Length: 170
Image 1 (cartoon, one colour):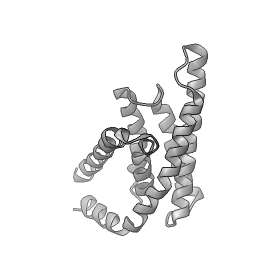
Image 2 (cartoon, one colour):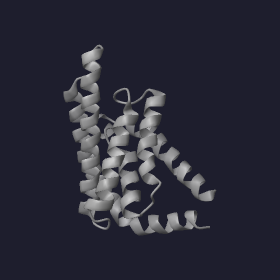
Image 3 (cartoon, helix red, strand yellow):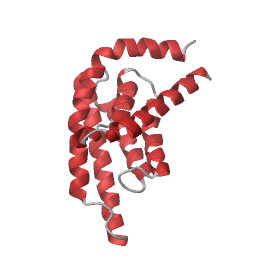
Image 4 (tube, helix red, strand yellow):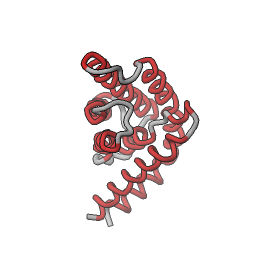
């Protein structure tokens, strides 16, 4: 029960930081994908398997609260979580910065691609939702800002792993 409570609390804190703090920053910095970076870091480097679900639930919360970039964010985030899970487990090393960076960039690229496809489908059947170039530039900034964020997290891996072990195995 403590394990689940700690995972849920961490997820809620990351969503609150993403929604309230990061979104209020000036333009390039407001595109920083805090939830994505922490989730892939914890999933791939720290081996916390619940973290991949945070991405899917993050998309669900963005849909639920109506603060996502496009409607149906859950599908885009779900596809991205699936691709990141495959990359983390079968394609890239879990102990290198380059593996983390590549997994994060591929996950964000998948998110962007699926969002553009959903946007194009919505633009065909309804009024235009968003211009794809705006979404693309915002996601490119997010990809660019995710890399230094991983550089900040990487040296903190061992203390984070010890803290998670302490929380998950009381």
